[in-house]
Length: 383
Length: 54
Image (cartoon, rainbow over all chains, first blue to last red; front, side, top):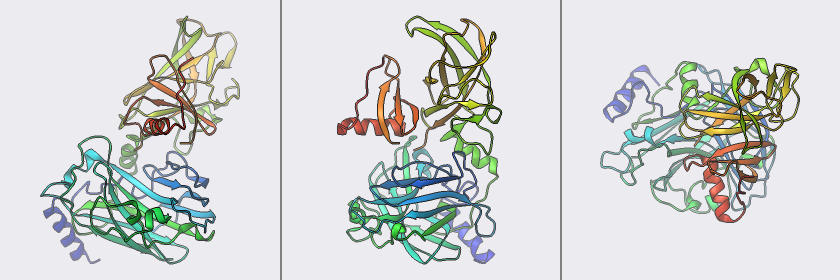
């Protein structure tokens, strides 16, 4: 696209209520932040967030399996992409099967779209993708609050290609101004007849499921299948503009609203990570709970960024202190005997969007003492 | 999340301890938490029971 055309598109979007800095409603569209992991194998049984922040893989009923990685293959101007590679094919597609790569945009960040009003704005989705072979897949916008959706086919080739799709404004169905999901953008890479038996829904409607992904190929038809994705942008306006790059720390900060852990960069939540690669040890206070039948060491951890909602927390043991090797147990410093493994797995004390408490029990801890305690944790408030 | 067990951590019923594959996770009783929403869905479907706290 020429610079003149790019400028015309940007001005057109600004006139339509979009454009400018912060126009990309996606977070981590350049696939630069991967707090959970950079590679996970055997995915396909359970939906979830496995590698790149904010990008969910949703599976249903498929026997297909894949490896998902943060990959260094990327178009010019990008350093990373999301890669999925089929490792187990599934050519007998049952009705309810599904594989999508998706991101849900928080509803309060969708208000400028004015969806459901006379002033509703069109949305333009753009991204770079490539694959091992030519294929056709489906991109879908889904407004969960009001159960309305719209889909469009797109093509992928063996070279990096910029896909640009403009979805019309939807004057029906207001998105609530809250912290739930506003619009979910999904790329359908595999769909059974439950999602593909009808005619593809190419206008906004409260349509039946079988119109969501009609006409798309199956990613799981061969173990040679790959799909790469980066430079994802969804913006207000009818014109695609160039990807809005941002500093790494800005993207990471946005991601922290949805997921955070206390591991150093390059280390990921799991039992057995060396304590020096975590933000621990930390101080805890020991108290005696007659009701709980033991001595508890309580620690509080204020999140770096307030979470979207109260998160799910998980505790992990650390290695390198010599306390022990039992899963989920933290180590505490016993002044009379050195580092010691707690008697039980560490539990959540309390959880809010601002902080979480962790509760470790050990019969040898001294009541009213401030003790050093070491452990790993993660907090997940994804949509 | 692949939940095989669920139990409140205390009698206040504010947090649910769940076994998710090889991990134990702590899910707050918050309708905006997607794991809690999933637990409610499974309870409603009759495939999961949340045990009382010990």
